[in-house]
Image (cartoon, rainbow, N blue to C red):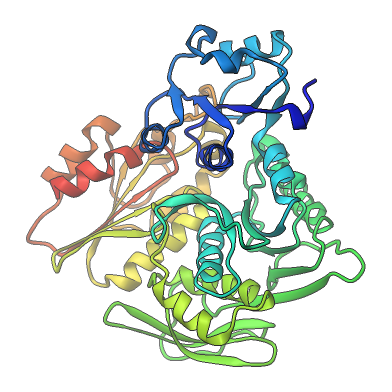
Length: 469
């Protein structure tokens, strides 16, 4: 096995993944040789190539750069998205390369800094990107490995050599977050997911309980989550909350008390204003830079973590107002009187329900059309009823075939299966026909809110859809 101090190069199997590309950029910026393989070109791989990181789409050892054929000096980083029986993976194993999971490499990197981690079924990417933005807009500064592309920085990697802090999205898939050593962490939600890995909801929640045992200084957890943190001696625990995680009710209501919370929430003319409470102070009249209802809760978590690490009241005010969101996290791409178009990465029933509610709040009295691409056969099978219930809140659903990612088909599991469970009008459309179908189908005389939802590859059609509409 190669020694870490002998490593001169990194080769990434699945380099187009959002987490993998951030690691590749990180090591490339530190002067290491970096390249990788991915199955198909994407905006991420094209960006990597433009930055000088070679990407091949040929699963063949003959396509490797010469330096990537040296087991003693090149470390292989893999993602579960690339099968273990792929030709390149098999070849690297046969040649005696050290092959590590992305989470193992990220864990090693973050142990060298104060890691501020964000874990949870929902909200990880937006909350961690908000936190990174707040730190960068303050005197604290910070590095970041993000699970999405920050609209403020146009990257999923932020490097700040003057700061000892690093923000990390703590991914629970395959228990990846167990490789991290969080200095502090947020836990946003523990709604069961990835049951192909965990098997049961209880095992999923237990994984989060184990994760909390790794925290060194403080946990900031959404109030009421059904887990019992296993905090070490001296580790502090704070709760956070915001009222009404879905649509706001008629009239005013009061926030549930927590250590950190939002209240006095006002929505008007496309703006969301609220007051932010810490255990010993209040910051009134904050302007939420990415004005989406679900981002109130995300911002409370991010500001709590930033506040605990020394970001001042005025820095929080300026930072949250200038936050521009995350690519594919409720991005409002068209906003005309007769048509609003939102693109969102939501791929769990709870996330979808929240996104649809946010659309209806921001664009009331409009005909709401959703386009959903299910992600993974196992997730579609395990949460079919939940998907159907969430999607039925639309006025109309356009359903695409399942995006398989790393999985093989499961008999009886398909988008047609979901069609029979959804109660709103639904049409099944092939992905390649989506843009033409919507252009023909949307009535320009009827005020419409359109939302595309899913974690697959539908995003590659988003620019075409924007241009078409």
